[in-house]
Length: 184
Image 1 (cartoon, rainbow, N blue to C red):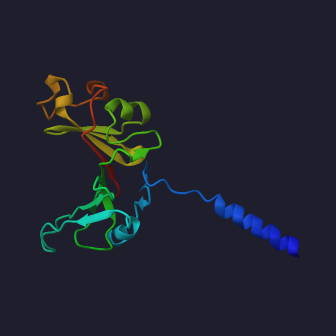
Image 2: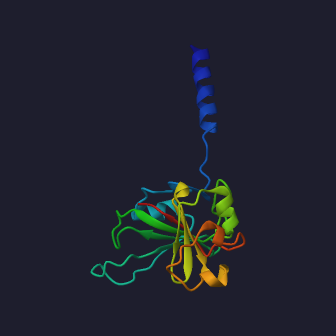
Image 3: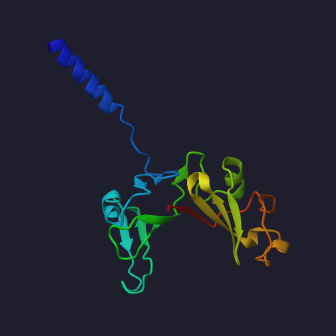
């Protein structure tokens, strides 16, 4: 009986000690560290209890405007900007995250300071959208999209918003302007 209890205790200790800890800076398809695609606004304060959470109110409940939530670390460095699906609703889920801090990265090392070559060489590009000042590169594999300033493109592609931009048109050295994650 004593051996059974001792063996059970040893297995319990081994199991508990093997528990995998979540990397707070790892970006994957459905989470960024402890933040998941089902996280509600009311959970943000708990998830980032050791950081600074800034909620800006841009209007009132009648405007329907989305109110971003900014996350800063203890030293004042901005980490993330979270946009809830619905303004002024504590049960709303987070729909869009702007990744600001370069410590946040995917398993393949993609972060806000990466280049277009890093995106192209590690992920399948789902689509490219041409806008007035930017090119938006979508990567469904991680629910990510990246804006690249058109000044990074050859001059003949900068002015025409109707021109179809292909992967071969974007230089490998083009810098990511914004690294975004979008959850439906």
